[in-house]
Image (cartoon, rainbow, N blue to C red; front, side, top):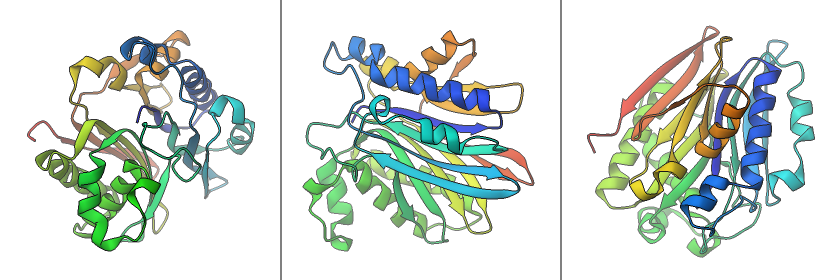
Length: 284
């Protein structure tokens, strides 16, 4: 699966609108994908979706949306309307180019939503994927669906829920440790594809909100396409975006910083302050 990802924490309308505009442009014509994959992929036209936690008037609101329509045809005016007069936004956005053996429908568009053992809702989006046959063997005893009816990212979400159940601790720390253990397992069992970049919104009991970022890719040949970049602002905002989106934001004057490969980052809000947990996957 070849997709464009955004994970963000914003406090200003200008930053989020610049990110959205850059994502739409990069998805309609992905010049990095066109170059890296030699014309086989030029756009992300198999659907889009988002999961966003919006703080407005001291109360959180959750926006969860996905469709099989391309983002530039579906339009994002409703999303821009939802983002009016907010105080904080944290979440993930995804545009999709499906793998050849994967259904193209709204169900298979990202994000995928799972509720895990401590009551947290996880909304996850992904670029890349898994060895689907191997992943199915891990979860098949607990599932009744046909593997050909779903995507490997859907299977990843179920594996994540399974591993989360084995953990403990406060939701953000538990999420970070679970992602680390899961990715150790995926590599050890040769289940990880050439890229498993994964962004997540975690919304936990007591209105605890976190943003999870996994950067993981193995093939240098496609590195330019798989790279993830960090953008920060003087207002304390932060976004993680796929390479083509980063280039579009650079054109708007933003400074971008490459995120190290094989990295897990979880940002979470605590007493109104954005805090950070990070783990290195290089020891895999």
